[in-house]
Amino acid sequence: MRDSSPVLARLRQSLQRLEPRRETATTALFSCGHDGVDSALGGGLARGRLHEIFADEEDASSGAGVAALLSLRAGEGRPFLWLRTEAMQKRAGQLHATGLLELGIDPASLLLVIAPDDAALLHAAGEAARCSGLGAVLVEGWGPMRGLDLTATRRLMLAAEASGVTLFLLRIAADPAPGAADTRWRVAAAPSIALEADAPGASLFEVELLRRRAGPPAGPWRMEWDRDRSSFRDPGAGAQGVGAAVPQPQTPLSRPVLPLVAGGTAAADPTPFIRRTG
Image 1 (cartoon, rainbow, N blue to C red):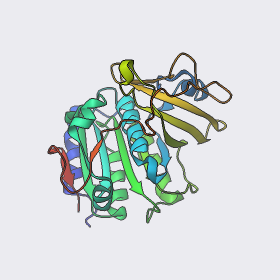
Image 2 (tube, helix red, strand yellow):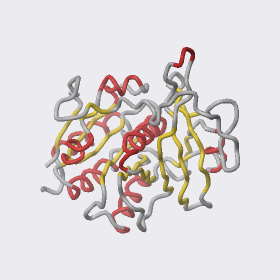
Image 3 (cartoon, one colour):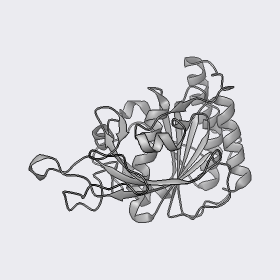
C-alpha cells in the first residue's frame, strides 16, 4: 500500500480547510454524563488522547455502541471517522444508517472507511489521527491485531495529542496487552429497564475502568444511554458504582437494543458514507 491512502489524504485536506489546527497545550475533558464515571475520571475523558475499549465476542454490539456514542460526545458536533477492516465488515455486518439514527447519531456526520487488513487499518488510523477537523476516530478490530503493539499505540497517542483528535480503539474478542492508551475499558451488555407497558427500555451497558494513566482502576458501573440528551446517565434513581445497589431489570432482554448493524452481506438500507482504502 502506498504511504498515504488517496481517500484519507483528500479527507485530511478537506477537513483542515474546514477547521484550523487546535491548540492542545491544556488537556480538555469531555464528560460521559454518568456522575460516577465522570467523578472517577476527574471530570471526564481526555480529548486528544487514545482510549481502548474491550468487549467479548457476545458483547461486540455493546462495545461498538459505547465506542460510537463516546465518539459522538467527544466530537461536539464535528464529524467522526469509523475505521474497520473488510473482515470485520463481513463478520459483524454493515453499519445500519437507520439504527444509527435510533441512537441519536446522524449518519451524515459519520464517515466509514473499510481497510483491506489490519496493517492498512493501523496506517489509516495514523493518517486520520492527524486530521484536526475530525471530532473523533473509532478504530475497530477483532482478536489479535497484527502490528498493534506498544510502539503502534504510542504513535497513535502522539498523533492524537498533536491534532487534538480523540481516538477510540475498539478491541472485540481480544486480550489486553501493553499499550500507550490513556484509559482502558471493559464493556458488556446489561438488561434494559422496561418502559411503560413492558416496552423495551434504553440501551444499558456495564463498564469498568481497567487502567488509567492518571489514576487507579475503578467501577464497574451501569450506564444508560439517553438519546434525547445524547448523554449517558445513571440507570434508575441512584448512581452506579462499586457497592451501589443496581436496579433489577424489568424486562427479560439479555442484551441492550443496539440496531447498529444489519447482518449478512447486504444492509437493510444503503450506507453511502462508506469509503475503502488500499
